[in-house]
Length: 112
Figure 1 (cartoon, helix red, strand yellow):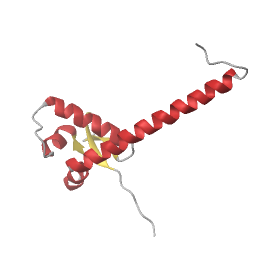
Figure 2 (cartoon, rainbow, N blue to C red; figure 1 turned 90 degrees about the vertical axis):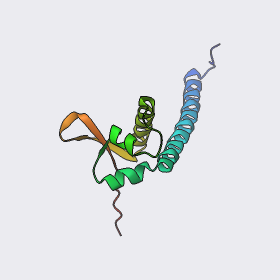
Figure 3 (spheres, one colour; figure 1 turned 135 degrees about the horizontal axis):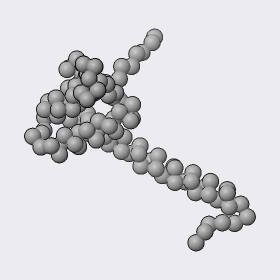
Figure 4 (cartoon, rainbow, N blue to C red; figure 1 turned 60 degrees about the vertical axis):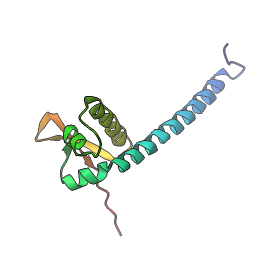
């Protein structure tokens, strides 16, 4: 059933706006829950105390959870990708080798 009337383009635009609004709320929930999870695991503190970008395996080994499972590393990687997308972390190359990437916290400078 097509949702079309005299202003079919306007109807599509309204539906697209409504769908975008719902998706934005969905992803905002994911971002906040991911941040909560990262804080509960102590990920920001672990990376900060490391003093330089951390590889995924180093980070997984430093976490206070049972991390001897490859599936845990996959889940941590997904969590880190969400935090990168949300602007809390950045992923960079370590030792100028493209296959070795590390995560570090973004630096915020406060000017007074």
